[in-house]
Length: 426
Image (cartoon, rainbow, N blue to C red):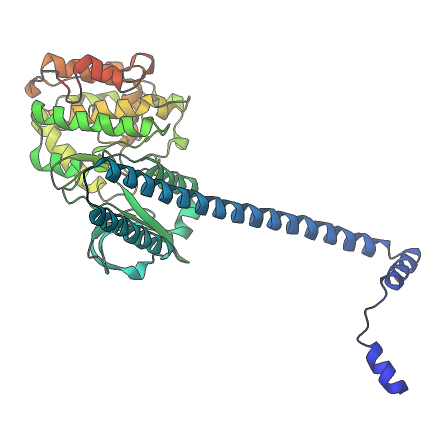
C-alpha cells in the first residue's frame, strides 16, 4: 500500500510555494542574480506571446472581414441582376437560367480563390528578359492554356541589395491600379527561393527595340506614343506613385500596337549615392572626360551620333547598371523631388523618338549626369532632325527647371495645352 501511495505521489503537481521558498533561500545565499534572470526571461516571453496573440487576432479579424465583404458583394451582384431582369422583358424561365448561371460563375470564382497557385501550374517557355534579381519568361497556364509573363525574383539577392521595399511597392501598385495603360498583375506567389509575379504578356516588344529598328519616328508616330505614355504616367500619379525609371525599355507594346508602362520597382538605373553636387561642375574631369572630349562629341553628325548610341545601347540593354539618360536633374542632385521627375523622362524619350538618341547622351555615364544637371547649356536640337517648332516647344517645356516643368500640376496641364488624348503639336 505504501509503495502504491509513493508511486501515485510522483504524478501529483508540485507545490509552487515550496519552489518559491527554495528560490528565496537561494537568494539569501547569493543566488539573486539567477532569480532575476529567470524573471526577465519570463517577462520577455510574455511580451512575445502577447505580440503573437495580437497578430493572430488581427489576422483572424481581417480574414472574416474579407469573407463578409465578399459575401455582401456577392449578394449585391445578385440583387443588381434581379433588378435588371425585373425591368427587362424577360420570361421567368430565362430569369431563373440567368440567376443559375450567375451562381455557377460565383462558385467557380470562389473555387479559384481557394486554389493556391504555384510554379507547377505553369509551363515555362521562352526567356524574354534577365536582370539583377531574376528573369522574365513567357509561360502558359496548364489548365487554361492562357499565356502570361512570369517575373521570377531571387529573394536572397533582393535582401542582399536592400530591394525588398521596392519589390513590395511594385506589387502593391500593380494590385492597386486598375488601368489599361499599365501592365496588369494577375497573381503572385512564392517558394523558398523565389518570388513570382504572373503578369500580362505583351508580344509587341518594347519601345527601345522599336527605336533601334526604325532609328527615328515620324512626328505623327511620336505624337501617338507620347500621348499614350502621358496617360500611363497619369494613371500611376493619380495613386500617388512616382515611377522614377521611365525609359524606352519600360514602355511595352501590346499586339495592337498600344503602349503600356511596366517595371514598377522604383529602382534607379544609376547608383546616385556616389554622386556629389561638385561632380557636375562644367569643365571638371569626370572619369577622364574633359571639355575637349565634349567638343569632339558635339562635332559628330546626327547619323554618327545615332550609330554610336545604338552600338552602346545594345550593350546597355543586357546590363544590370542601365543608363542615366532619362533621369531628372533633381533626382541626381538628391535635393528632394516629386512626380515632376517622370515628366522630365518623358521629354527625354520624346527627344530620342524624333532625333534618334537621348538629349544628353555621352560616351561616359558620369558625363551624361553632368550634362543633365547643366541642361541649359547642353540641350540642343540638331538641324538635320528638322523638328517642328511645336515639337521643340513641348520638349523644352518638359526638359526644364522643375518649377516651370509642364505636367507639374498634373497631366491635364499637358492635355489642355496640346489637346487630349492625342497631342496636337503639329
